[in-house]
Image (tube, rainbow, N blue to C red):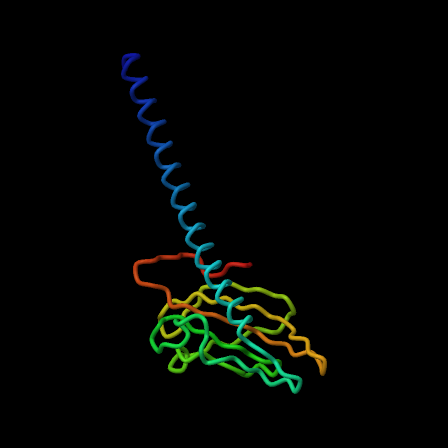
Length: 165
């Protein structure tokens, strides 16, 4: 039979161990959520900047200046890509950085839908943020999907694959 002091020491050690594991799991989850939200916010800001640069004329022709505010879109191999898909599900515009990259297929159009996800292209992980809008002009409405994609940097591990915005 164990003495009272040994039982108290064993109980305290067990409680401390359970507490430490619980704190470690909580911190891991908090770090994951914080990193995911940081990437999502960064990509959403880039989508809004791209929308601010884009113009649709009365005939429905999309015009995006080549001198974008974000220099990452203008450099090949920058790991940050942007493209705009029109109502026919074809690419209406793509950044210089995405010229040598495979563009993922877009989902069906739903006005106002924002989607943030982690996808695999050529065994490389990418984060992608898409925003579906209807661009209104006097001559009509033009559905467009603005998408920004970034290659996941080595050393950053995300285990889950799909998030909803």
